[in-house]
Image (cartoon, rainbow, N blue to C red; front, top):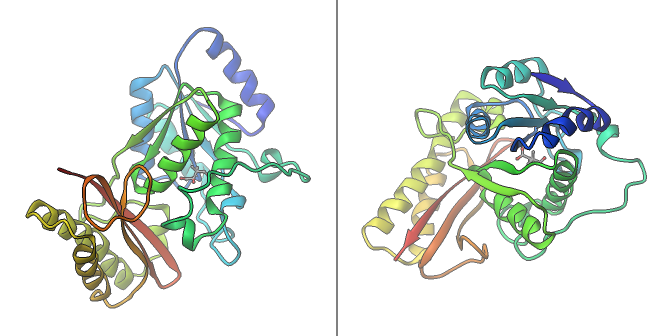
Amino acid sequence: MRLVKTIRELKQELEPIRRSGVTVGFVPTMGYLHEGHLSLMRKSVEECGFTVVSIFVNPTQFGPGEDYDRYPRDLERDLSMCESVGVDLVFAPGVSEMYEPDACTRVTVSGLTQNLCGRSRPGHFDGVTTVVCKLFNMVRPDRAYFGQKDAQQVAVVRRMVRDLNIPVEVREMPTVREPDGLAMSSRNVYLSPDQRRAALSLHRSLRTAADMIEKGERSAAKIRERMIDIILSSGLAELDYVEIVDADSLRNIDTLKGEVLIAVAVKFGQTRLIDNIKVVVH
Ligand code: PAF
């Protein structure tokens, strides 16, 4: 496995690979890797001849007062994890390599970014789409792998790829959970033992929603009410949102029908966690 830190080296490494016609898979990450990231890398290694992983804590997707400075970082650990699943190349640039000091171009996906995390983190998705677009231009992958835990991010990236005709196939992989149901996240390390216990209410609320739907409930209001009860009864939760939206448009719905995304964002102390499920309702 090779590690490169500059765009020039990245190009040099990738040119012969592309010329040989090998399929290039790409997993963009912000590092501090966990089993969720590894599952994306394994999929890429399985489906593609060459797998590139980027590790870059992207400052432009963090708002003022968010956790950019204290976001966990451990490149050595990340590299050995990448190596353990057969990644071929890691691109780990610094901020000055990624952004010219006078950069003034941003990629904005409107509409899809207004609801859910876009509402509570203004500007976040502009940061994500701008850096992902830049990374796609640098790596020029055939396939790129994202986790369903960030369902809105996947929807927004997909739309960017479609609207800008970026020649990459976006693959969405299932959320990987701890044995007790907590969705894996680099931010889980911030949680105290009490907060970690309370955070299980997210998955519990989503499972309850799935059960209610299974039993025939179609009212978004009733499902939300029950989910909010479960999350607040954990004691330590500060609710950001519990939303039931159409999985394609990400607009709120009153009655469940078609593919539906049920998404939650909750703060435990300073730590904001998100989780979701998708259900198809007939
Ligand atoms: O999901 C993430 O880790 C980030 O948003 C991404 C896609 C690597 C862009 O910085």
